[in-house]
Length: 325
Image (tube, rainbow, N blue to C red; front, side, top):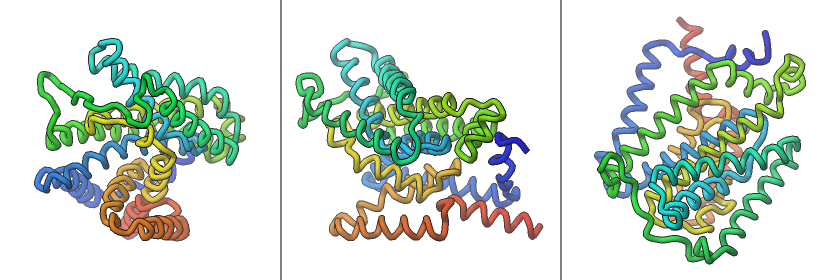
């Protein structure tokens, strides 16, 4: 078995009935916010935006690296899209595309420099880059508004429909998440995705089969940071306000927690992690210290008993069903 097949070969195919039940539950989760209150819709939108950013982080993680700069690239997407529209008078969609492209180009340059670093060294450099980006946004107050940020950002307009209400924006964000999920799932069922998985599992063996570990990691880093920028573009248009503190290191740590709790090696990990972790701060709003204690305890328990994250529960259950049948 080649390294590009090793990950895919371990995937468990769930029985048809179990998959149908999972699809029904998935659809119910997506539909439920339309029948909930305004605040529940807000949390659902933020969960969708987090899913996009965490999916990007998952792609980087599956290539064998762990980035602490994800929030910085969310900021690049948000600021570039807003500033190019305001300062250059560009169309909203062209400005959004430029925000994503700017993040991808920056990721390509940065990745080409630092992706030869391994382990803690890569983590430290990405952490430093994230802080450098935040401080730069604070210092360039003439352009970025500094600590005051940028306000009154126009909402998205799609085919003449202005997405200025939560139900409208939620419908749009769900559509984007589904597209990202389908693309993510499709890529990691194909040779390119298997190659990315294999370089994380055994880089030396993957290199010996002719795969370029460095090039694949750069590609994964570019795509992952591009998805972070897409999340930033949508966040700016939804909230209508951005500031450097909206993209601090704590935001990246939140993304990492979502990824670990959801499952780093699962397509469903970002979805589950964001779905579980996004609403939790609201439950602990009156007890901030308790919130961090819970996060720490949850991470310890997940890493101890479910190293594959919550998504691995489904795989374990599906595997048992398959053995029983």
